[in-house]
Length: 276
Image 1 (cartoon, rainbow, N blue to C red):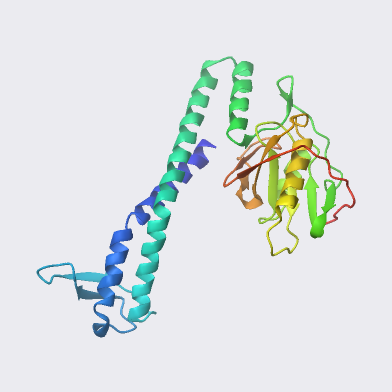
Image 2: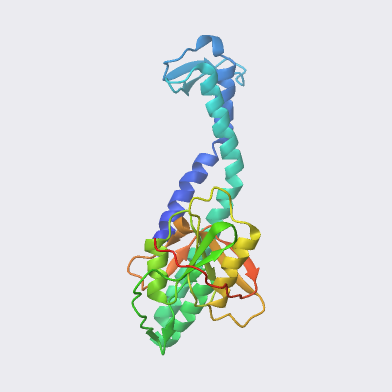
């Protein structure tokens, strides 16, 4: 997890560096716009007058030879708008990832300084609160789960949506990493052991309704250790943002771009199995 976090920080730093060039992109677009008559398609660069220079200095402007002058200008303006809009988002995400990295580093140091079983239990609890799910354990040892004989149970709900649910860690692993498709939605009760629940899109172009999302979340809450609570926070995200750390036990995942629903644990009547 720490290795993946470091790579994420490096990528965000590169995105941040690019986003901070918003002013440069805007200026290049304006320079091209002011010198349209001097340009033509096929140029890869041009030395143009800087309208902001009192001495009439020229600057070298990189161009895309496949584009005409107006298209090159619009390309820079588009990059300017994207950088300007994305800058606060990237800065916020970078701070969030760095805070998470600091917490994980602290957990690793705490784990090394405490007895193995006691430290492991505390770290697992803290990881669950951070949205890093862990497999169910019993007496400090990984719980042995039955090997699934078939695809996990499927539930049919309104408007033709199908929900799959894992009944143990091995089924959770099978469902999330082999059966679910990248754009399917993945649900899990936050901070507690429980089932992985997949809402299969199956060709649906429209987004699921709030009712459909709450039904899937309610099922995830019901098949978790929080099933007796009145309201349970359930995180969900697209399956493509759910990853299994290298060497992790079945059921352990790391999620990104998640949202949270507070729902009542509720069982859905099972009406059909999906065999694909």
